[in-house]
Length: 99
Image (cartoon, rainbow, N blue to C red; front, side, top):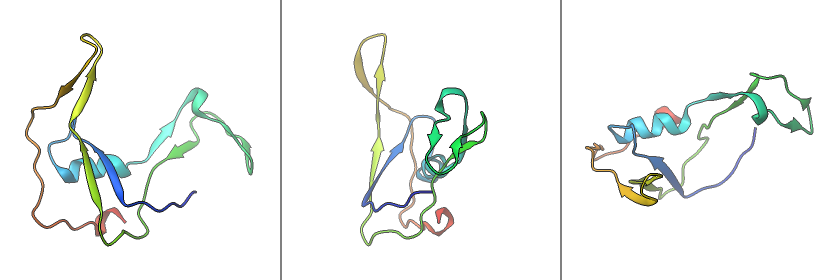
């Protein structure tokens, strides 16, 4: 477990229809497989499928900047492409459910 301070979040837009969907994806926990299992100084090498990564907010700054990642790299053209899909967001943002 690691704690850090921040004042902005970079949120995925691709595959998300709303700001809340992007935030759910940001805080979702995932289990890392294979070579991602690194040696931990405190616990030694961890068996495959036991290392988890996720995020939970203990507190939020007074001003939080949300950077929506609206561009994706297109390997076929070698250029950045702007995502044109619909993306909804509330006029009042309540973040308690992500803490």
